Amino acid sequence: MVAEDLFLLRDGLVRMLEAYDFEVVAAVESGPELSKALAELEPDVAVVDVRLPPSFSDEGLQCALAARRARPGLPVLVLSQHVEQLYARELLADGSGGIGYLLKDRVFDADQFIDAVRRVAAGGTAMDPQVISQLLDRRAQDRPLGRLTPRELEVMELMAEGRSNTAIAAQLFVTERAVAKHTSNIFGKLGLPPSDDNNRRVLAVLAYLDRG
Image (tube, rainbow, N blue to C red):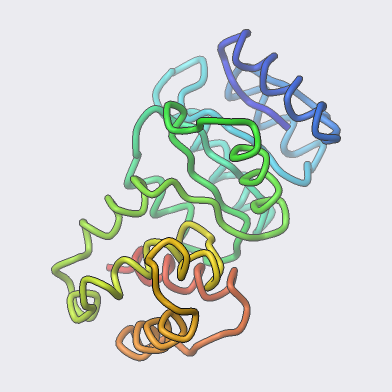
């Protein structure tokens, strides 16, 4: 399902998704239409703009939050021009997975976007690095997050983007063994049990960041 008030962008999203073998069950342009479609159609994933009619404020996010309260774990990929910290944190709060938050002007190609949609639909996370950075900055002085080293913060940011240990190692030019060690340290300092499931470990970290 797609929710976007601008016709050209909405039509472009639909055409791109269909080109990658997604079935678009609805493409709506307002908050009321989105709420109705989410309730009636129960899509596998919803791609939602933040600002929709009639208020053009946070209509899309409010509808997404309400839909996830009614159907926990409903996969939602948010598209926005800005980082709405309050609502990003609220979306992450339940830790049930299937959450993405991308900034429109930082989606550079179709493969990047489609990968994010698929990851969210599968119950994972797809977070723009700037979103993660702002959430981390908000909590950076709070304990126990403040105990993390600069390298551990880098690793956690990449984890939160949804990257695997292999991808993190390549990005930071270190070994996978080093990444595994940093990950273990992170969970120890945060008081979170380690997990072999990348999606669950990312959600645990994001849920922690939302507390307070």
